[in-house]
Amino acid sequence: MTASPQVEVHPDKQTLADAAGARLLLVIVDAQARHDGPVHLVLTGGSMGSAVLASFGAMPDNDAIHWGRIHLWWGDERYLPAGDPDRNQTQNGAALLESVPIPAANVHAVAGPDSSASAEASAAVYAQAVAEQVGGSFDIVLLGVGSDGHIASLFPHHPAQRTEGTAAVAVHDSPKPPPDRVSLTFERLGRARQVWFLVSGADKAQAVSAALAPETDRWDVPASGVKGQDLTIWLLDAPAAGRVGDVGRY
Ligand code: 6PG
Image (cartoon, rainbow, N blue to C red; front, side):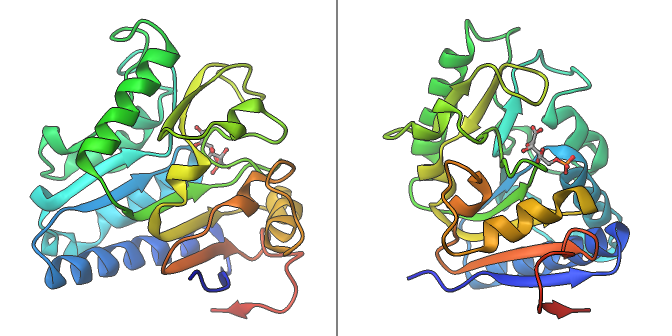
């Protein structure tokens, strides 16, 4: 059973990034102390996702992590060639991944047009990798949120939202550039122990409050449609929380 979402508010974007980076360290170290298996972490694109990874990477204690037992995935990827500066992988790499000793085999990138025939083919290969390697649930899914309420590459009123029976879907005509993308499906994003929404900025305040309102339909506000099995938490800065009402603040 999934509990109600928690909301945690920080004064500004940097404090939010630092708090989320520290939380990430703690949750991973705790999981690795409890079992010897892999920890599957799903990263997000967007500026907030990279800010969190940069804070995480700057923490002096991140060598407490057994990097060989971490597996990294992406909630979505822009369908662009490897190394393109607009790929989420490139941006997250510059923020953290190039500076930690994670085995290359544990970094599960989405193929771009340089190594895949189409976004559909790339989504199929990615879905198969998720099915083979994750099996059950992701441990932690990080999600940025757009001002229109999108998460990963699942946009309001976009048919890709409706894909079922597979972990990943090709997305075309994305309202946020670039137009071609690959995204985890709602079904797969929801198979996660913990889901963390990372949101900064007043332009997101309306989307955040709509996503938290119980009657909201995910077709209109995709961020309302993903819950963690153990925890759903909204990590916000004060401007993004401006329309949430009475929530806990640090
Ligand atoms: C992408 C993202 C997307 C992003 C949000 C929030 O590929 O563009 O995965 O879903 O996370 O648009 O982005 P910001 O944190 O930059 O606002």
